[in-house]
Image 1 (cartoon, rainbow, N blue to C red):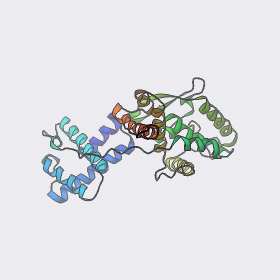
Image 2: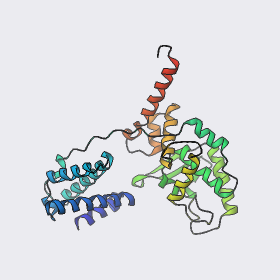
Image 3: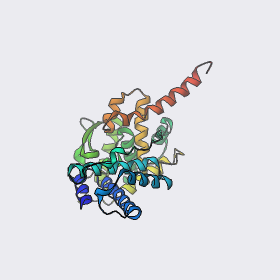
Image 4: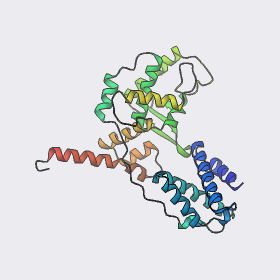
Length: 295
């Protein structure tokens, strides 16, 4: 019952996404299963920090990544904070738990020359799906928006006159993203061909649809991005998030202010955006080695 109330709390009061709620639910189920099997404990009030540490050790022994373990720890921290707030537990065992250090992974991105080649030399076709697919990739690359934000985009969210669009990000936080003349032209082309070739359905409010007029879905967008990035890149991962990384890295490399990139990406704090400075440092190292006579 405590878990159900907690999940309702993060879903309706904290307004976490459905994916996050499911992840928290799975983490808590795994934790409780471990506690029952290892310690025969059903009562959450009886769990100690030593028991939680033993669960973390068991996860690490299964070669589960530090990132995943840290997410599970974050789940338990939120859970016990909730239980304490509700006076279900009086002592929080998570206070003595330290998260394992993570190796910061530098985001992978597509080189500018390869993105130029994709837009200038790769044919997307002149039919509805080709024009739609090109615009999908342009929106990821020109705005840095997330996959979920692109799928949920509606006609009313796009202001062509002022060249800006509105997206609904994490925690249902709205933000405004400006866009260029080139993107404005692509949006107009897509709207014209959609009106001409696509069936009218209940999904007409959504900006991106299938040929049959249905709202697009994650798997379709992944397939589109993977297919076209595969024409210009050998990166193992060719996803919408790679285009988000590419947007941020190219902006930073061309002199954009870090705080401005943070606002466009919708990051809650600057620390999340600063990871892109690693790519910029690598670029500076390359330039230095090429340009300095004694390097």
